[in-house]
Length: 336
Image (cartoon, rainbow, N blue to C red; front, side, top):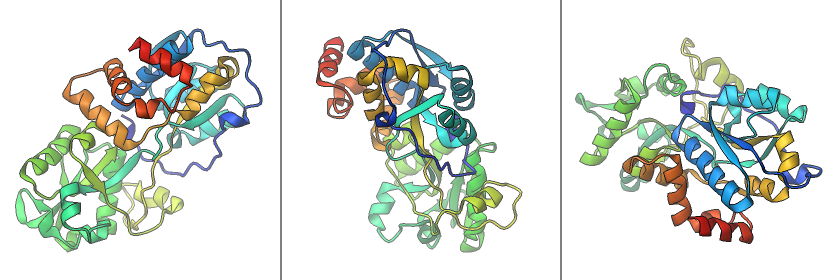
């Protein structure tokens, strides 16, 4: 899953905007292929694009399975699929840069308005009760607020399972902050389910919790959490040298910046799709809070991407109506 990766470099590119595309051919939105990546937020976004493009703009859409690296590479090299609704472009900077420079790819807009977020989080009720806790360093002053369930005399930092990039970074942060000498233990939760379970138990018991998580995810829609700030600016070279390197012995505190999540389309599609479709894809952007809420509903209702898309369209017209033309909005509502 996409959140298991951590970028080692900061992608510094100017994404091509819809306005910068010289011209569109006559509208031709037939036989569109959309990649649904293999995680929940990307699945529902692909389903949402399918519904809107088919019912609002008369497209004929096929949704295919995908994943970040193979999908974006295939788009740059072979021109298929046509659309990657949730492209984590920081994970493949060379592919994206080359595709843009060779005019094989277009990135009309930001899919996730506040970026995909990774870091250390605490429950909102803890943040509300202790407004002085704003950063990781602040939290580490209070082991008593974040007790180790196996030894309440010590604090706990909950980590992800082995093999995740975020687990490596959290381990390195634990060293950089000298958390062991601040009376904290680093807890290996063993699995995604174990990590989720630790948050659920803390919420059920209204206890403190401190550890690694990411957004957008269903669990943050169910259990409101606050991401802590990090007590240093981002240093890309240092991140690559040590923060994301499990074997590095001397990590430094380093800001964990958000990943860019863009809508990526092939240039061939952008040239034939027409201005209304490309304007929609450029406008279509939602926040972590919106996605978290939707993913939580999907999880609670065992809903798939199509179910989630319909639920969103039925309940969040104030959001999606800003993405489409008034004519398309009428057609979409009629199709619900």
